[in-house]
Length: 158
Image (tube, rainbow, N blue to C red; front, side):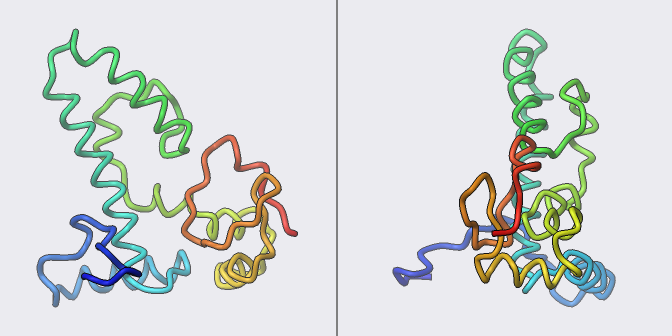
């Protein structure tokens, strides 16, 4: 991993431990087709993002109630602003049960397709990489950009 262009990997533990697990390979392939991912590294990045969220929720659950109260509300509010949860008053048990699809649904590529700006999920990726999509007036060229809830309605074609 030592070059200047790729100094370190960005995913933590998204890469599977057992490489030839047929069921896991089929699930990954289905998710890649459904969300138009280029390679499995993009899926592993989403899994590592979800892993960080669940680790934080687990650490909050292990605290006492008076220690947890101020931290828990800010944690839930941040997840709500990012769009990972629908209600800012969701219990931590629901946050622990989140799926990788929640993270994949917040990607710019997926939102462009869901909004109807592209004919297919792959067309959405092409529009983004060819600088045809703007978010709040700025061109974004990364299909994996996670869109917060407040910028969701500011996605448009350039």
